[in-house]
Amino acid sequence: MKTIGYARVSTVHQQLDSQLNALKRYGCNKIYTEFDSGRNIQRKELSKALNALEPGDTFVIFKLDRLSRGTKHLLGLMECFNERNINFISIQNNIDTSTSMGKFFFTIMSAFAEMEAELIRERVLSGLDAAKAKGKVLGRPIENKNIDKVIEDYLNTNLSVVEIAKKHNISRPTLYNYLQRKKIPKRK
Image 1: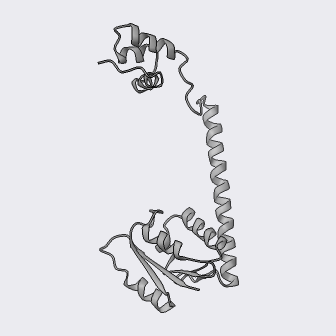
Image 2 (image 1 turned 180 degrees about the horizontal axis):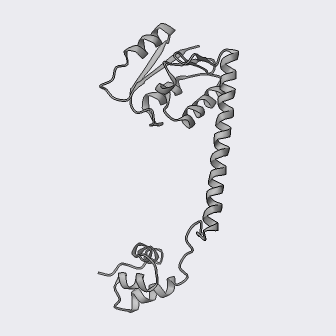
Image 3 (image 1 turned 90 degrees about the vertical axis):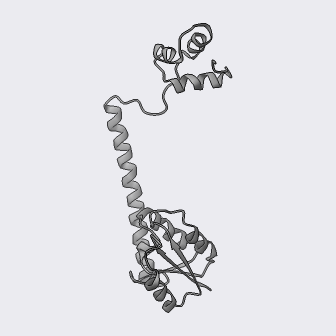
């Protein structure tokens, strides 16, 4: 079983020394280092570190904010560790999911994640209801029923694209999309 460490700072002007020292003292077999924002969830070295983990391994960080700056991302990683049977250690935060207390902490975090997702869902639905009450039409715009008339004006009149779009209450890009769908070449 491996113990893999991960250290991150946002810029090359910052130092990794304190993180690296703590990870080495903890006994990490391999340490991945990265210079990238914690808000960026697509980090090359983090991906390598996560891919190197196997069931029973331990993933160690210096502090939670070194792993992620977003709660949602952090909770997603914690869930992934649990599913893959990977122990997670945060040295500064005293989190160790190989212990009973660490598992309890993980369970509490999972509950908060579930509650957060439900609250977001409720806010979205409430916002949609409020928008409907104000008369806002939701969803994809209804396609202009006059597509044939738009095409006819384009092919058989001297009206400009702007004039045709204005006449049929559509945008120029929509008019061009209609032409493209019907495979009609643009005027020269």
